[in-house]
Image (cartoon, rainbow, N blue to C red; front, side):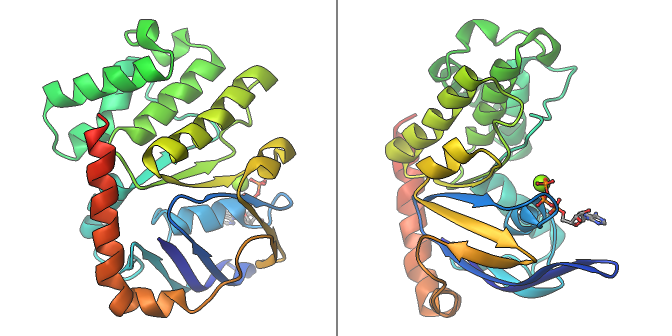
Length: 253
Ligand SMILES: Nc1ncnc2c1ncn2[C@@H]1O[C@H](COP(=O)(O)OP(=O)(O)OP(=O)(O)O)[C@@H](O)[C@H]1O
Ligand SMILES: [Mg+2]
């Protein structure tokens, strides 16, 4: 599903990532932990095609996403990846419903179909009566759930979250964490979550510790040569698996 090969990244003279090898399977809920400045956000952004590595390759569903045109990558990102940021990053001038719709409308889906799905998602996330409110009129927990609905609108196979519960109280935090696992169980989505929250990292299937630009400890599977498979024979299989997943996610909606 996601394979990283020898990812390095520097900002000026500071080498933040020093050769990251990592493989994440479909349906895994993985947490990334480590001290502040360790490179967690940098790694997540590279995994999510929002930043490019200096060396190395990122494969998603067997596709090399590191060496593609910006336009193709933007399209791929819109269709396959959902993002939840620490500070929700909703657009203040739009309602909750409109914010949720944006990635689908960018992806060229019809307004009617998109609004129906957005309403359904808001409903599932307990926000049916907040749909017409703007972010400033929502609580922190509500805003974060709107951001999750927005991340889900295009049925992405992968959700990348950067300290998604960092600004929430313990009740909202627990609810949001539970939601991630519910979504994985229901739709088979893969979650990669950067977190300082020990409660959350303990719940995840696997915790990856980043330190000094390297994976210091990974309590799940060690990196294998899966990336090699993904580039050639693995590609067809992974693509088919992906199509099946999207169809099944679609059929729930
Ligand atoms: N665009 C940038 N330009 C220069 N330096 C950067 C840039 N982005 C990140 N850095 C530096 O790279 C290092 C890693 O940053 P990153 O944001 O990945 O850390 P992090 O592990 O997410 O930390 P935190 O837990 O505090 O969010 C930090 O020292 C940071 O200052
Ligand atoms: Mg960070």
